Each structure stands twice: as structure tokens, then as C-alpha cells.
Amino acid sequence: MSHTLHRRGTKRSLAGDWIVVAMSAKDYNRRGSAPRLRRFLEIALIHGPVNYGDMRTGNGLTTDHRVIMRRIREDSLLNVVFVSKESLFGFLAALKEADLGLSIVVSGLMDEACRCARREGFVPHTLAFSLGVWGRKEKLAEKGVLDITTMCGHGLVAPGLVRLMAGKVADGGMSAEEAASELAKPCVCGAFNPVRAAALLRKGLRDHAAGLRPDPSRGGGGSFPIRSKRAAGVRS
Image 1 (spheres, rainbow, N blue to C red):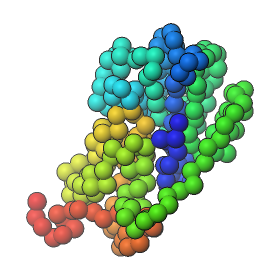
Image 2: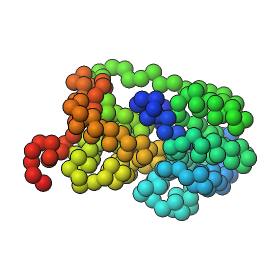
Image 3: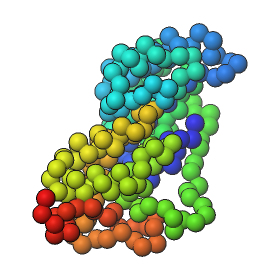
Image 4: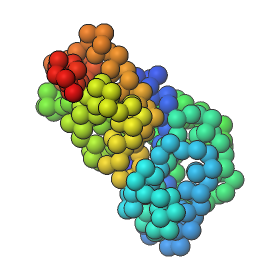
């Protein structure tokens, strides 16, 4: 699966962003796989993911986990998101013990992901790298915005929503965590990392306060624009 492949950011930021995807394979092991997919999610929930979901049902921030569990089907695609390597290691060790016979994909920093796989006795058969964005990159959102929106590989988190949430945090109407939770909701399959999003929002506000502004070339460096009433000198 490639929808978790294009996440952007610094190595330090991405070090707290681990996504594990599980699915069955059509005409290979799909028949009767729903109970094994449920077991995958049951094991994941023990290890404290910050988000999870089934793209057919919803994510853990919008849908009760019991509903997600009940609606898992043979063709479901499940995502779980962790922020620490320790949680990831523990989860993969439990998956190896369970031997569910599912296709498992780990997305994260490549060297760390491979080290984790070797540690738990897995042999990765495929490595996928993103070659970045090609074409009219001037139409991309600002880098700080892209760091957040690319955590939803299906493009359901709009750049305008990121700017709006950043403005609300700047105005004191929301905490960074509350804004990140709102940003995570449109990402139906649960691949969005709200903990990382909150950290990126706080960084964006710090950069803005320090006078850093978005690179006009788009997709470049700098922070993201803050739609703040306070920043504009308007009383709320």
C-alpha cells in the first residue's frame, strides 16, 4: 500500500510516526480473513495506538472501536498509528506470536523500520520509497501545511482546514490537541497521527511568532500562514 508513503517532515518529527497496515490478499487468503483482521486490531489496541481505523467504517476518533470491530470484513484495510518505537516493537512481537497470516506493512523511517523488523524476526520482502512530488509544485500548499495534510494519504485533510485550525489555536479558541483531533477526523481510514499534528501546529505557531514566514515557492521551507484574528489585529 502506498497511501502512507508520502508523509513529509524532518527526521526528528517522523521519528514519532509509525503506521502499520493490515489486509488480506484477494484470491490468496481473503476468504475467512475477517476474524484474523479483528484479532489484528484487538492486539493493536492493547499497545496504545494514537489512531486506528478501517477505511470502510471510520477512525477511532469518530467511531467507537466496537463498531469498527463489528464491521470488519474480509476486504477491510486496517491502519494503526503509534508514536513510539517501543509500542511498535511490542505490537510487531505480538503479531509474530499470533501468526495471523495477513499482509503487514510498516510505514516510517526506513532504517528504523528495517531494524525493527529484523529485531522481531521479520524479513521484509518489499521496500517502497517515495520519489516526491513532480509537476507544478507551485500549486502545492506551504511546507508546514503539507507536513500535516500528507498524513492522510487519500487527501481528505484540506490545507484550508489546517490553516483554520492553526488560527483557532493562535487565537486561544482551541488547544493544539483539540485542533489536531479535528484535523484527524476526515481521515476515514485512521492513518492520521493527531499527536504529531499537535506538535506540528505548536511548531508552526512558534515559527510564526519568531517571524518565519512560508516560502513563496510553495512546498518550500518556513512555517505556514496563521489565520488569526489576533495576528491581524482584530478583536475576537
